[in-house]
Image (tube, rainbow, N blue to C red; front, side, top):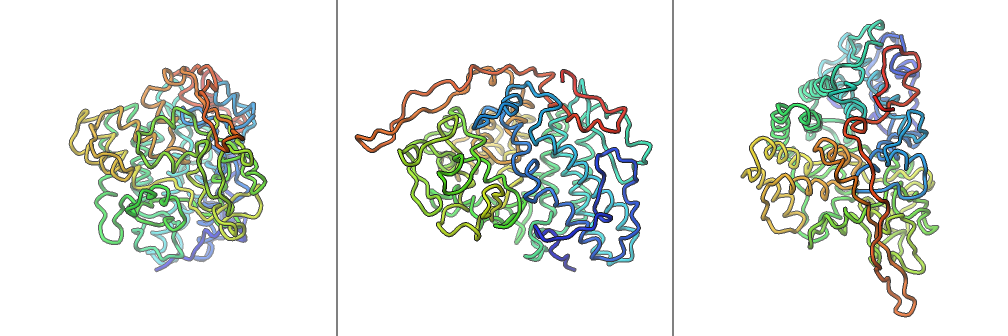
Length: 538
């Protein structure tokens, strides 16, 4: 049994009655109340609606979205002048902040509602049992996925608690109950949903090529591990779940075996970020786009305006401390960050970054290059990237989970439970180091684990360096240090880019571990609710 390709972006007309969800998460109409679902085609459309947040008009979710929160980390800055974004970065965010990250609360509760509709209605329908199992597996996956998207940013283990949990069994009268006492209740529900999804979903090898992009068993297990990793900051017992779920992914064999991509060259990490690897051995889950529609995250950074070649937006720029975090000889550094004086192929041209022709807009003097492969060729527009620079969808998958993260999650769980120097953790970290072309001499310390996560996963939409810093308890001390930037100038006499002394981008920031462990819930979330309470300090 194959499921039709139901997530093609753009041009898919979705019936409002089928996929409407609620205008906010407290809408009284009971999920699943629709009576118009009669055919498999109806369910295909309902599943397609789960992906509605990946289109060009969902810029606040898969364009910039939670990357505004990532500006709080020590990895990157806002990138260009934007006062409300600076308020977020400096922990002055108000509930009324206008940055489009506010959209994520509403939209992820809508995804939750759409998933609930499927979970409730599909089992009662006269359809093929294998199809129903797969459809409900997708719904369980997306219900957990939607909550994992927002719960870490808004919920804690005190003093605020979790965020509302709304299931297919939730009665209308119960939709406005007080917040859960702890975000651990959210993580428990996410893990439960991902376990159930893992039972129902097919293996990746069982998907037809036209179904690539749908969730599968390994994706469900890996996201369960991520939820457990975030929960472990509050209760160490969750490390056991991290190890369990990572082991399930690592035990896959044959066509489903996941591995680190390595083509044997010193460009292997850069080559990982090409469309040819969208579904390669390292792939676990991505959101897909093309030159017409899809996530626009890859176009949000780089050079503002793209030297009039393509309208990149110039947000989210790397800090000097991120550049310096890479060990000498680490091939990931130059695959991740473009440094003054380096060259990059862009729109068919060889760009000397920082030259008189190709100046630097970044507020840190550097920029990210990790996801720029779709823009390399002169004929990329309309083929690999959207002709409209305001809608920078492209053919490179927007990676949310890959195998390297699984290895790092398990290594962290081992080190935090069995102690530094754990033999298996060393093996896992040495696999990461080997692909980075570093000496395989891991000591499996907490410091090494933290730095490997930082370098390996830098600027990926998920996971979050900021969430890592908060859960490790490092945010207050590290954020208090000045953020540093690179300075350079073009020497016309020698026709070279000259690196000058670095300087402070800021004088450090004040992070309150109680208040700033979460962000303010958007003011619009309180429409129609009595019991939802704002996070303290906001």
